Image 1 (tube, one colour):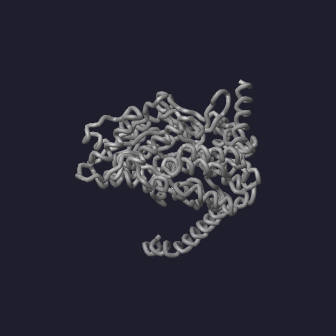
Image 2 (image 1 turned 135 degrees about the vertical axis):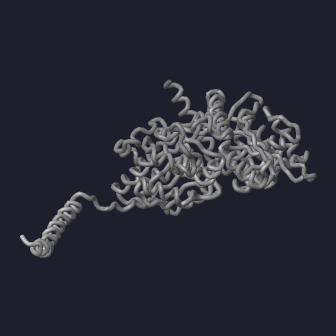
Image 3 (image 1 turned 180 degrees about the vertical axis):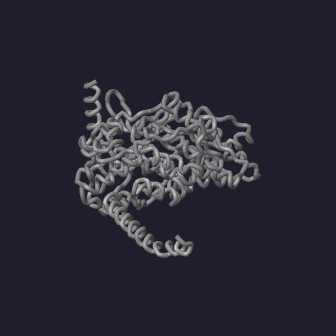
Length: 512
């Protein structure tokens, strides 16, 4: 064969080879495309869930964190973050106008306001569906029963430790005035008085107060101070009869103590109308040196305080000895409930999808985001445990803490554990004191008891007690005036509530 023929042959056959290859590739692509159509599931539309939840911090969590939760749960979350100070009012308004979100959170102390709405059919009963989900079927049945209405389950509960209550004080003020941390009620009073009159900030002016408080007799200073005086937790047992806390001598002693603080200008004069945000600002700005409430508020208070005064320090105390020794009030096993609106959730199928979202949030990847944020930004992992730098702690307190409001049955969620030796010392102390509170709890003997009258009018009667308590502390009425208001509470249904709770309590005792 000539050299010429060798050069020509490839020119003659190359187009044919290309055509054959192209046909083969096209056929292969058709096969691939056909198989793809058969095996790839259609894109899932995110499930839209609207919620109303309380915001305990200054601002809502950043969109970055919400987006990561949405991606993991295949949802689109429309969350109305309502400041805690006005949450109760907005929640009640939503119920009265029948305009709730699909999911609405109810704080445990406010549960009385929704029980009749539950009975009226406003919310889905979810109990029969819980066993369909791998995580929801394992939530604590005892706690679920505590939340029940007429032995039916309507809500998914959130948990908190039984008591995180204590006293937060300016440590640098104690040091400047050569004061030790108070251990008794008298010592606590003495510290707060000197914080008011002995120039603890050293500026030569009498411009500080000993205690910042707000318009909340439960989560403000009043109820925790009441624990130190031995006040029962909502209800006490006197000679086999249930008695409301405000009909006890210890409650009167607590009012007297608060009145003394008010009369001596140790307490902010406008405490009865002060919001939590304003209360916090009095600590952050250096106006007040004492704060009585949740110890978990300490890290955020300290972060913001040190932005204005880097030398400022806080210390925390959980045990204050009173006339009956040590005690601190406790919340029930649940902190609040997510309820599911029948008006907004139209079908059983949609309800099941929303329950699936909550079930998914209990998985480790989502619950870790809610507890710690994003790895690398808010924490790192060492030896399989969480480690946070001081800077990460600050970001966590600002961005991640609001997400705690979204966690259900969270004490048993599958989250990472913090490395103890790398834990922030302040947070470690909070955990230690919170655990110590477990040994001095004052529990509510009426918890889980049923009073039809309380469910019907208890919420309406409570303002009588609140107004009378504030009026006494402010000096607007005396003890006789306070007693007249309590008599009014009894006449309007309180007496019947006492009777029903006493009967339920005696029945429970007789069955043990």
